[in-house]
Image 1 (cartoon, helix red, strand yellow):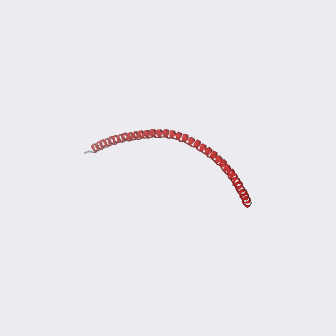
Image 2 (image 1 turned 180 degrees about the vertical axis):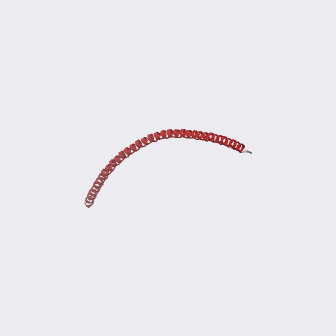
Image 3 (image 1 turned 60 degrees about the horizontal axis):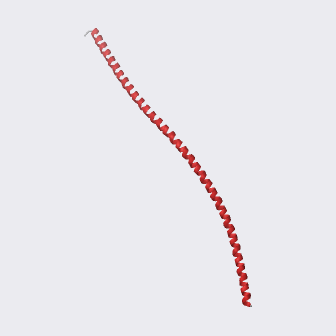
Length: 127
């Protein structure tokens, strides 16, 4: 083979190799594009799910706020009722103390009357 033929053969082989490399690059570029598009689709799906979850969280947050307001209202009602009950118990305690005083007076009066009756009975028995 002559130098000219060798150069032509080398040029042809290099040209074929460059064509194969470009074809491989184009194929790899296509695969990369498909993968990127697949990832983009997954990202869109995840974004939709996150948006949906965010909407659900907002709805749940609203419900929790409403429930918290109801609990606060019930807590206020319970506190008010306990205050009323405490006032009633204080009133009842005062009445019991008054009754205890009256009962003590009544018992004292009964003891005096019994002593008077005993004294009268002794005087009657002595006569």
